[in-house]
Image (cartoon, each protein chain N blue to C red):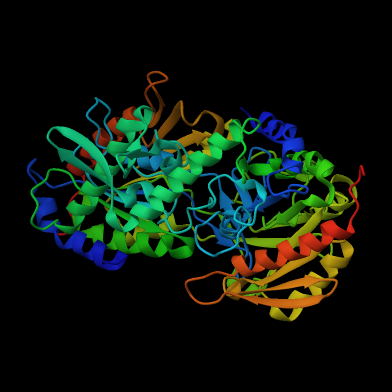
Length: 316
Length: 316
């Protein structure tokens, strides 16, 4: 199935989603992950990218047997909208090139076999089995009675906004039970098509002057049109601590977010600050073996519960 | 071992390399692969990248049992200098996320096993076994009598030029037996450190004007200082057919390359044009199941032989 079919099929099950085994309306979160790119030429050779690895979104999605509370573990159904090639749920402990580094080929009685190295055995099994479980569940969704489901949808190039719009307008019927966890790093600047060089920009003629326009802020449209009653969490990343909280505050007010997660580039794996209308809370990881996503999501789930209790369903 | 140790160890075997089993001086090619990036901020959130997947360099390196003539198959020792995360030799027929798409986990008599899907079985076995063979050979190089060797060295960020310099100056002693096959897409423009924003550039204050400086042309230094007698092949990629050959010709003359491979973005997998002092030759792939790298390398090997016959060793 293609992206449109898969997403439509996912939402065709909305009655099931709204009447899950836990009682009450079923919670669905759309997690966006990885960064978007913008081309510098119409026949694109070069583009602007950003450092985002997709680690935050992938971790936040998982169901683990440990006490860590990510979205699937917290009873959410997840739509994981990720940039192709970025980190996937359950894959964060694998080496960069898992195929070449986790396996070896053994020649046993004229039978050539691929074996997993002992050191990576558990991580590889988890990544593969969870990946296939996700696929199987999303396809047999209507018939299934599983208590958690995850649909993975990938984007590349400029299709991110378009796919997010499709997901968001489909989630509209869930009202306040829907959540957006917008961890993807969306480009702020782009070159408009009409002012973009058609061919590869030539380097022979001295320095290159470029004027980049601001990307229209998608958060406004998401809040006003696509998902007016959903619980919306956006992310603000800065390298300058001095302006981080001020920028996060401004985003909270301007785009009417329910929460903004403020990260500073160098410390983002140890601490984030959750900014809401009721104040600012620093969220730390417990120790080096844990992460900041688990306590962050625990907080967000509580705030989402409160949001569901105080916000009317659009069709009720 | 780190990159410096591995590369030094590789060249410590130069007497062996120059006196291989084939008789005559041993040929070594440095294949560069993938693209380089340039940061837009000192505490880098954004950077300029290019489309290069590393497919050309990876394919050109391989040893295959077929009749295709890549470098290892043609008797060369290869130093494969690639951008982390780009295509590796023997991996081109794998899906984008091989770990998740090629494997399944089976539960057989309480023993959980990872199995390769039938459809990807051969590709996975080849990729893994060749990868480990490469590692083993590079580490036990001095003792080995194998007829072909490959050393993989990865780069990221701005370390490309530095590592290439190290490899090139070490290859100087090989004189005309050394070849450079510079398939990596090196950035043409960059923001000099002193004019670079320290922090993440803010999007609140309207459009962004950027002045990018030209990256100094490394090919001049490679030819003049690092590798004056090696056989040097550079690549020129354009999207505009009209200027491609003129640009390739200019590069041949300006940087005193022995050959320039001219590619046009849209047709680069079907045809390239080899530009040398003796003229231009179009190199086509035979059919859809073959590629342009095999006939290209066959031509280059012949031209390299002629170069070795007519160029004196620097120390002879």
